[in-house]
Image (cartoon, rainbow, N blue to C red; front, side, top):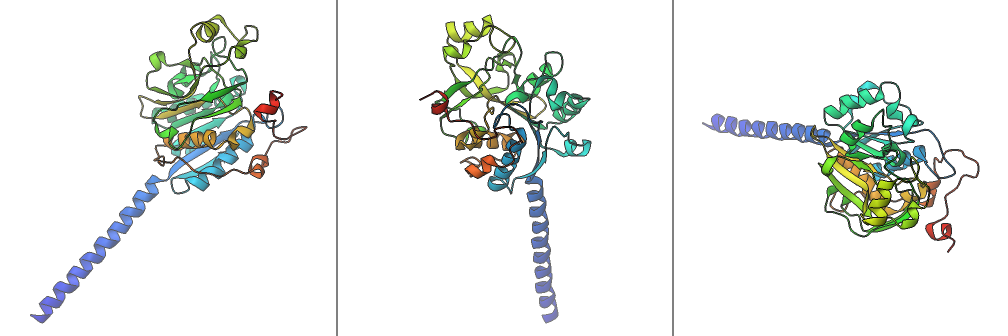
Length: 320
């Protein structure tokens, strides 16, 4: 009788031990599954000092993600237009490209667009920053409108420098913790979006000032359609947006990012970091991704250029 009781006690202890062990294994597996793989691709150096700082930009994004979302993402960086290998692309939960566009776009080299198409079809996320939202009409335009929800299209979109003021943001995971803000940047607008904005949520919207269309008409500077939209109909323009695709993937387009100094603005930076998590299908914290960026951080990893340094702030640039 006593042996039977002892056996029962030991049996229950062993069962409890197995249960705890199994729970630990399951918990570890779940946690491992929650870590999303993020691949950041930087284009080659271009433009003047502290402008189009693709390499410094993605390294800064990596630092901020590892500071504010280390338990959610594993980040890999490729600099100077280096393209990820097939295995890395296949494993990525989201890809970010910060680079020049058109013929210099890393995604438009060799068979890279086809490689991206394969990953987008399985639901991989995509984020494009600044000039990287501009493919060419012949190569990438239709794909980017599908994958990102919209893109820059020559003879339709424009690329002036102007001081935007984003007074309201929609309720969306990418805007969590982001307060209304404004910055001087090369905010592209009059983008070519999906018809009827299907699946697209505008995130940053403002009405550009008339002087943003002061240049003569040209492939990037102006056209009758954008003038009618802004100067006659006074239609606010979307300069950042999120899309949920039919394939289950998510995309985010951000037209700012010309000046490296803009990443020092906590709300602009938080918005982009949130978008990286969201497109990777990671949970965006209620307060957004928190990170700290110092002047030293902004000076780090800048491309070697004559006269390299941060641009003047908006007031100094306007002569105030």
